[in-house]
Image 1: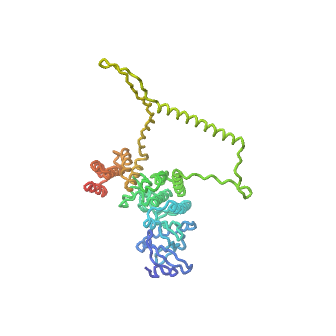
Image 2: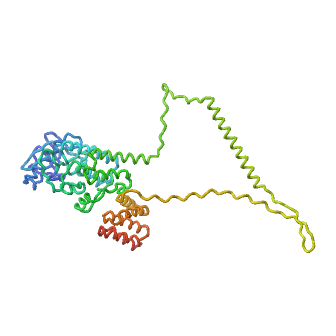
Length: 473
């Protein structure tokens, strides 16, 4: 929808509103002076009379303009004020945002996701080196150009070194799905907070969902503070579990325990995927081609006469040994098989008469053929390994894939370690054991675990669904 010319300076014609961004509205327009499409962020009218918000909006322009020279940061062209409403003019990117891609496609191929993460990390690391913290890293602020490259946008709530802070301790700023634990508790954000948010984005790009996704923003922010890092391979079974230690570091509660930069985070993801690929590779390595001699292939190597004589001698010895074994085996078999029956004359006296008769005794039976020893019993399957939370997440992934029989021992192992803690993951383990039992034909025991799960985490529709399943099966 086109807007009136009074909203923006006359040089920006054909302005159309295309969305919201932080404290402002975003328009697409054409810059008549430079002859190019631009995006213009205009401070929302309801905020324009608030002096503090006007200053914050201006600081956004200053912070972003300091970073405009970086290839993966949205470029700022102009900053101004029109009819008492500040505005910022920046490059227009036509590829949408990563948020749009995730909604449309879900989890991304690792190669594609890591390329985007590398570009975002490069821009954020550059910002941190220049004293700027973004504070609101999320897929909606990672924009794509027409070539599919990421540009970090909207430093609208960033703090710039050397400028008065407009965010006091105790004020939560950011988006709940990607907020760091320290921000969720009202502490000041740092570069480590941006790196944490980038880790959340990485988790979502690779699994298709946020690590602490909840129905309410408050619950999700609290989960960032209190809950352990979930397993990526448990959420998305196509991912290797080598990624889990990387996400445990990227999403550590303690900022000092995280990766020192976005580049280190992405390198950790690359390394984990490479290790997983090496552990599953089974292709033989082809021998290198033999070098050519002046453009012609080398002749086959010559074998010495002595080497040939040695080979022939070995072959002859092997043949002789084989012949001796064959004769021994054959003769032994004939002796046992051809042993004749014995016939003897025996004199028998009955009722005063003596008679001589022939008595034939059967040949002795050959000794029984020795039987090979029975194979040793197969060892019992190894117990599932991993931390309790990793086991819960792994069993959850198996349940989502419909493999309840495989999920049951994993969930039982997790529950054995979590029993009595009262944590939410104990409830998840109870549920996973219960639903696995229900769907493998043991409703009687399964319902007990479902009740234990509900006692910890409260009412859940999934538990009701399993109870209904037991009534109909």
